[in-house]
Length: 230
Ligand code: NI
Ligand code: MN
Image 1 (cartoon, rainbow, N blue to C red):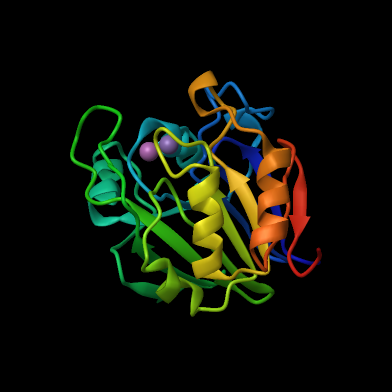
Image 2 (tube, rainbow, N blue to C red):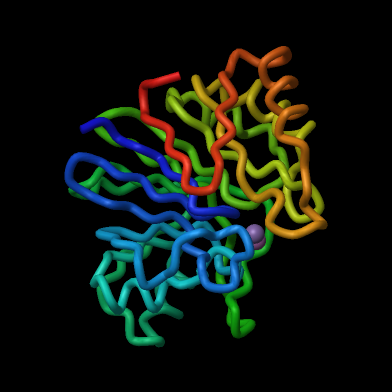
């Protein structure tokens, strides 16, 4: 089976490989864009970019129910352990680790990371996920930064970027980001969940098509992109 990336709404994604189901930032309960319930998702692994409620989301409930391994920065992992989550793996920015499902590397992101109860959540991160079928970069919530050029050197099949503006980079900066990251495929996220981050994905896709070497793939919520396809 080819690796698939499914958008669960907002910044939540499900990556399904031949062996594993990996959730990224599983915010489903209270997510106006979500079409699946936290009770209905399976997970072997949960990856978190930062501590904000719209990213940590249902991590505790899903981890408790499924026993999924939670990978996040040290501060978030410590907070989760305090909530009774035992199957965890702390990392930090710049560090990579080879897991049985693939290699995770945390990158910089320019944003905040306070946890839902206002605990300190360390620094926010992006994630490079290296799988047998290709490399995916989840930028997390971030501004545009020039070091995306270094992240692109990993050789990216897919870059998942916020385009909502206001809390993160907007459409124009995401196009500039793609020029630095040079992924084969660009998938937008973190838009249209609430009115303040509404964006026109048709305009965005046209700009990506004309100004970058990347192929824009705008997913519907529940929609899937197969790694290696166009
Ligand atoms: Ni955030
Ligand atoms: Mn967010």
